[in-house]
Structure formats: C-alpha cells, structure tokens
Length: 148
Image (cartoon, rainbow, N blue to C red):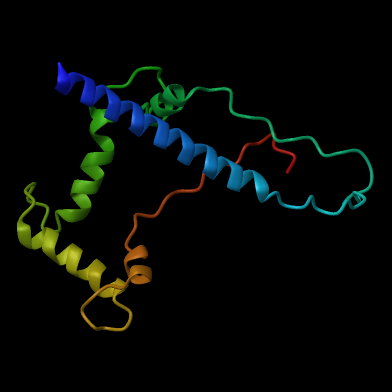
C-alpha cells in the first residue's frame, strides 16, 4: 500500500511540475509579441478588369491515370497497354535486343549516366551532380482554354 501511495504522490508531483513549466513557457512566449507591419496602401498591378483564373481539369486523379494507360482511347485498358511503359523502358536497356537484360547492359547504362553527371571527374557525385541524375519529368499538357 505504501508503494502505491508513493507512486501516486510522485505522479502528481510530475504532473504539477509539468504544468508549471508549461505555464512558464507560455508566459515567456506571450511576452514576445511582434509589432504589426506598417500599413501600406495597396497599389493595383494592372489596370482594367481582373484576369480570369485558368479552368481546372475536371477529371479525377484516377480518371487521368486511366486516360494515360488507355493508349488507343477505346475506353478499355488491355494488358498490352498496361505493359507498354515497362516494355519501352526494358527495350531501352536491352541493347543487344535478345529479350534478356544482362547485368552488363544495365551497368553500361548506369555507368554512362554516372559519367555524365560527374562534371568534375572525381569519380564521386556531389549533391548538385546527383540531382542531375533524376528522371526527367514531362511538363503537364497545356490546356486549350487557358487564358494565361
């Protein structure tokens, strides 16, 4: 019973100490209030009516993903259409076109990419050099009805 009372008492002391520390920190933060920025008159950047924002794509993310996979736009995704991006990537790496990817074929491509990124030829990539090895992203297609 004595252990129970000692445990309960120490728990209450820890809670009380935490509360006092918390209120002390809050009081210190309340004392440091930044001054409001000086008021300036808003100057319009353009004359005339405001420009219309570009219209957003109404398709959902899954609809856009389906449209990318549906290569022939027939409203169905076949297994061939689903494999198309991977087959293309495989064909780029399969330099001897034997339908098999050997380690040497992969290593040549990787070593070439490393050599192109290593601009100072020290056989190590710095952070900016490594950034050049990222896959290139295609820009999003421009919308025909955009008034940008």
